[in-house]
Image (cartoon, rainbow, N blue to C red; front, side, top):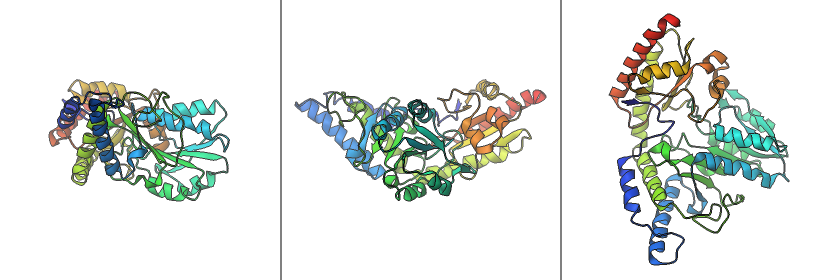
Length: 371
């Protein structure tokens, strides 16, 4: 099997699984005051401290959720709390569906949603600043687009937004965690999921600066924080800390390896006359988006699947046939209708790249008559 859909999800690392199993021995409810509960609470606190240290934030700024989608929804929906200051929100055309869906809900309640112009996929910071008005309350921009790999200059955007202290700056960093280094000191909130860096599904994080006050997501008493009540998921929290630590152990070497594979793929795929490379120099190497003229992406995806090669067509959560991200980047609807995402990770091997290229060539030639 050749798996090149790491941006959709990753297989749980064996060491992370071991941590989960070991943490299961701390089965007491961390909200309980007896010894078993206290032991579980201490394990959670140690795990949270580790996550905070890696991200260079405060442990008190970590809120555990079920995943990035919940984290995104939480920060966006809490904007109703600030509507007395304004109802204007700025975002991009490169966001995940868990950003667009709650934004649409707010729009139906009278909020104004605006989209900042892009230059080769990057936010035009000067235009963004021009768009900020007295009633702007939120700017939400993903750090890395899940379909094209475009890496936004979040730190530069954040520096500019510091001039507007009433504007909350949120970033979905799901596709960045464990792949690249970044600085969260310039954002007020950030979201990510553990299953994108070889952790478990069902747990995510909402980083929120202490100074940012949000509504309780789930009311019912204090848990790891007052914002999301319920019995703390000790095993998931401990294993997430382990997954995060492992993802940053050799991040520079891992990045270079992924970059080498990305360059090999681009070199070989560029030889096909009907193939267009959509990702550009602003994309991280872990994600390579291409389009095959005249071929439905699902058709090619299933053709590759016959050789047990697995890639994606869009973000796994996307519902539309047309890729919004590819359309925003290329301004070419045909490319947006025929895009395929190849996503690489530190666990990708040379043989995976070779297997993919062989399967691609086979599938391409089989469909060439119809191209």
